[in-house]
Image 1 (cartoon, helix red, strand yellow):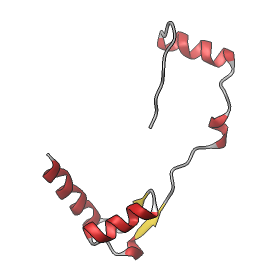
Image 2 (cartoon, rainbow, N blue to C red; image 1 turned 60 degrees about the vertical axis):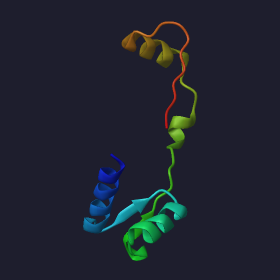
Image 3 (cartoon, helix red, strand yellow; image 1 turned 90 degrees about the horizontal axis):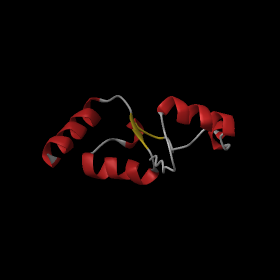
Image 4 (cartoon, rainbow, N blue to C red; image 1 turned 45 degrees about the vertical axis):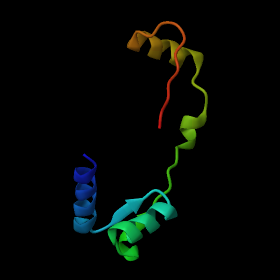
Length: 79
């Protein structure tokens, strides 16, 4: 339930030596809503390795489709 999740997050933040937030807004929310001291919060923005930004080579796509037994068109969503 929502109450359990909030309680778990509050407990984790209270026990943690440091807390990672994915944005300054999230860091601000942690301070305002949960009372986490600013000096315990580190902001680490989401990112991706540049090596992953290149399109896959056709041979890599064929190998993956065979290994995963994928046929026909598909849509892959990550996030």
